Structure formats: C-alpha cells, structure tokens
Length: 363
Image: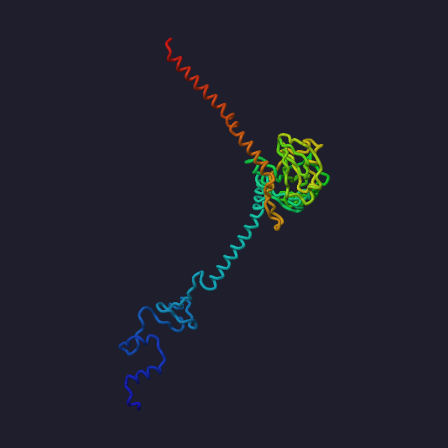
C-alpha cells in the first residue's frame, strides 16, 4: 500500500507520535491554536519560580504534584507494618521474656520459703518421711529404705498389734548401735542436714521403728514348743520375720503390758535391740503410747522397693477380740454418758410438776 493510499487519520496519528509530549496537550486547543492549560493549578515550570520557589521547588527533583506545584511527599508506612513491625514485635517479645525471667528469680526465694513452711506443716501434723538406718526390721525394711509415716491415723483409731510404728526413744532407748548423727559446724550444712531429716533422706538418731506386739493389758511371753512368741496365750505365726529368727528366740516373760504402754519388737530378732533388751529400763521394756510418732504405711524409696506395710493376718484374731471387747463396752459407755443429762432432765421435770401442784392447791 502506498503512502497516498493511507487514511488521513493514520497519517495524523503518525505525525503526532513523532513529536515529544507537551504538558497540557490533552486539553482542547484554544482559539490561538495552542493547548489550554489544565484547570486546578499551574503546571510545573522549570526554574522553580513563583509559588514553587517559595515552597523549595527543585527543578532537578522529582516531578511536581498536581494542584499547586507542591512536591509529592513520600508516604510513611503506618507503624506495625513491614520490617519495622517485625522489629517492634521482636523487641516486645524480648522485653516480655526479660520481665518473666526477672520476675521468676525475684519470686524464687518466696517460693522456697513457702515450700519449706508447707513441708514443715505437713511433716509435723500429717505425714513424715523417715530413713531406715539399721537392720533391726529386715527383711521388711532394709538399710536405706525411706518410709512414709501417717501421723493422723491414731487420731481416728487406736494403735493395733502388727502396726509398724515410729517412736521417739530419747532418754530411754539409747541403743549402743544407734546411728549417731554429727551436727555440722557450718550453719549452711546444718540447715541442709535438718532439711534432709525432715524429708527422710538422713537419719535423725533418736527415732526408732519397730512392730507392735502387745497392747496395754496384754501378756507377752516366749516361747511355746515351736519357739514362737505368745500374746495372751495365743502363739504368733510371723511370716515377716528374718530367716532364722525363730531359732534365735530366747525365753522371756510373761510380761503384762502396763496401761498407756506398748511392747514392740523388730522383725530381725537376732539383731533387734527391742523391748526384750530394755526390761531393766523404766517401763520394763515397754514404750509409752504418747511417744509414738505415727504408723509407717508405705515404702517410697528406692523405687524397686515401693510397697505398702499392712497388718499381718497373724494378728487378725487378736485384733478382732480387742475390737469385740471395745464394741461390747460401747453400750455401757453410752449409757454412762447419757445418765447425767437424763438425771438432770428428770429432776427439772419433777420440780416443775411440784411447783405446779403447789400453785393449784388451795391455801
């Protein structure tokens, strides 16, 4: 196709494309043939004259914004977006982490004091751990075992035969082979020793653990034809004894246990320095019920030795007889307790009746 054959409009477009763009050329031409300026403000003029110069216009700078020739201000990103947001969040997280760490170390001494107070309260009135330092209760208890002692049980029931009890023997049961605990001279070491004793990881040197054989009023003696211990004439079959203990039994008694006292023996009879060996002491070998700290009911350490310490069946019949005697005494006790208020109520009723009779009779 020749140039002459082109559409005149195409030629006009081709000529226009060859010229540089001029500001404001999009507007309709005026009467003089020059393009009209855009409404709404002056276009940017090279040289920064007039209002642009007063505003600090720079001809070499970025293009001017429409409407007044002002420079286009770069928009600031809102806080919390982009890299600045990540840095802010990271700073906040670090600050919170530092606050938590600081708070923990500040509260740690308080937590330790609270834990020690609670441990003291629990071990004084509820449960206490004890360390086994001797062989006197083998094989039931071994050296190094830790047992928990229930201090509340005897508030709801009486001591029973077969109970393994911890008691304080200070002043009367000081044995020759008692473990002596030397108190460190260093106050800090002394504190750690005391804490260890409270948690049962160290011996106290004054507490003993034995099995209750006789209660107040019981008659205990040894031995029958099979070398067994007898309680109230009843021989005891004791499967918990250390092997060979029956052969080591020596004759003693009969001994009647005084009121308020107990006859106790170890399960390893050959090495147990128990009631049999203290018969020349005050109490004739017995211990005071008031000296009992509590009942050992479970072994908690080492882990492979965890087990309970129930009352052996050999004591069932004896304990049932005691419980039966106590049950038989209940009606008598209740009658005695009710006698006084019944008597007082009867007297009050009789007086009122007498007073009413006097008031109703003629004078």
